[in-house]
Image 1 (cartoon, rainbow, N blue to C red):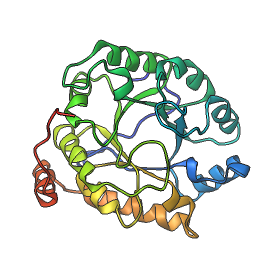
Image 2: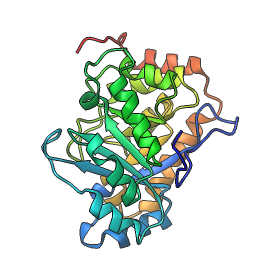
Image 3: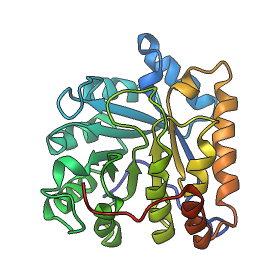
Image 4: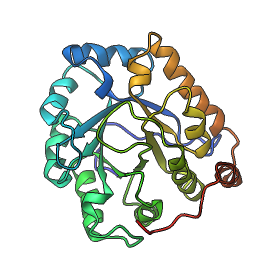
Length: 270
């Protein structure tokens, strides 16, 4: 766990098959001309966290915001800052984001692990330790093409606090949801009932049931929330879908969901 974290992660209360639901709207879809005002508004309307997409123009082709913007935002907005770094060298930015006010620091396994396989690589362990020592929670993100088995060793060893299987390719908001990725969420939830599992990419009231039934408990949604005339209503629908799926769903149900989706056996081939 993080060393003296500013804010705690959600935990289960025994009534559900996963940790408590958190809605984390992506500020990539907010109005950057009045960012603090828009973020405070979305928090008042029901957001639990704020999802901050950080892109460097190298790991992904887009460029967004960095630690200076986050630091300014934290001076005006009191909320859990859920930072997803789509960058080539995440270790370079750990302390800077901690100082800026980040609560969750999620990095991509693809840029830290020397190989994408089911081995517990020390470079990834070191990265998680550095994040936690800086006072943040450690998250690992997976591109849609990365096999979910690659992250199992870090969850089993307690190295990581959250896993984010992306349901779109990283780099741009507003992409179409990839339902096949939900088989990864199923595999994680069936194996790790305590794990915080985040989904990000194409999540809306039209797709939330698939993510909820698969086992996600942290929901990232950008354009579907910020672009709605009823933002509170959209977030309420997202939350209700996850809460409904979480109540009384067994591990066997996750296997059944996989069968319904026609999921193929997962492979470490890339």
